[in-house]
Image (cartoon, rainbow, N blue to C red; front, side):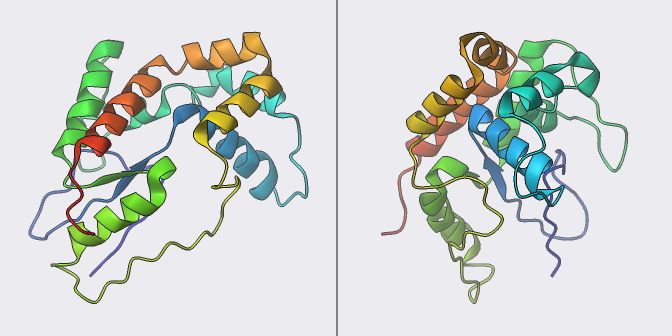
Length: 197
């Protein structure tokens, strides 16, 4: 048995003389930006405080020369059509990229949402228990940068206040595809009838 974990693994799903059990989690794209800031500009650098303000980070990462690490990141990653180590391939048409990312989510036997983490873990256990009966799926918070007890709405409000209307509006605009994908994923997630009590 081999497990691979990465923020950068791309579809399509692997094929071969083996069985794969993909585990994909999506996060609200705007909250993800805040998490990326705390990780990249604090934790990754080993600092006690971030090296600059959240606004500084967003302005820097929205610069086109940075290849959009906080601009429609999920849709970009999940719309890849290349396989087996080839250079990633994406449609140049935004709506086609979004539809490809949605189709990939629908193809998965399981995906979770960070904002519904405990319920996602319960579904993950259901998904894996027949193949791995001894597997224990446990909610342990490690390498976290934000308080999971704070509601999504409150997190978004705090981000809006911190960035200001203009920069927050630009961040929303640059994540229209990701916001659409998240809304779609949330609807799909909530449409699943719980199969375990």
